[in-house]
Length: 344
Image (cartoon, rainbow, N blue to C red):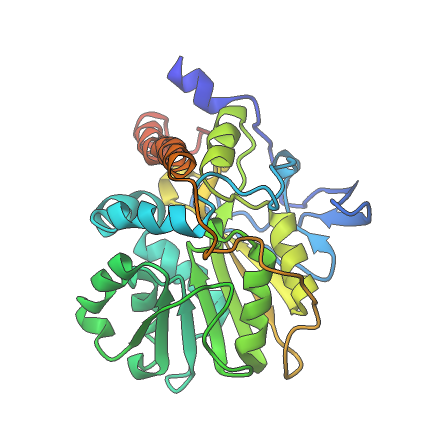
């Protein structure tokens, strides 16, 4: 029964020659969707290039998620703060092994072009510094700033020897404490899923970069299987690949590209969604702030919160998150059981 529930019926075979189709985006415009896939199955090394309004995505991932304007239970700053108050205790030892491995990290950071030791880099939502350890392989730690709203996560980062020279500060991804045209590279991994207003966070990424700078945002991908979609929409933000492209382009980024990533034992399966499923990059071609104009913030952290409603949201969201702790275990077991070369 568990296998039947998790498998679903969303198996799609991709031809190495790709497939093409049209659909309308959330604003009613027509998008030309073309797949140009270079498969190396089962190693899962997939590289997907995106040009303006061109999205590379298999048919099975074209699923309408809950609107980003309707935050999930942990897609609030206060709920996320307390969620990580507890998760920080086991984050590096429980979450990373199942969702965000060193191999995945290095592959996801590759498009960011972190090849200059003197580059100024901001790691937004850097948490325990796991991603930052990948950054400082090629960039001097003294030029890297780790920012996160969780002091409990940052306390873990401060303990890591390789990050001793990094600047570590508390801050809001949607209101960065950096001047305009400050950094050469912007990196954010595993943070967007908690942003109440993801468009504002990506707009801030554009603002703080110098002309010619590159942003690299690593985050979840939306599931296509009904049960996984349910828990994703209860827990936190799982954007579609179309939404990532739309947010980057609206902020002003050019040459927007997506690279798919995932644990090797998934064998390319994405129907359950991935907490770390893609690496999105874009280039800032002009100096100054983003051309996008936004209204007031979606969430006012100074506004009083009903304690009862907060507790209900927190418990429901955290409970839904348990599902995504179990999914990688299930996929790992399937990888051990199902013969190599066969779909799981």
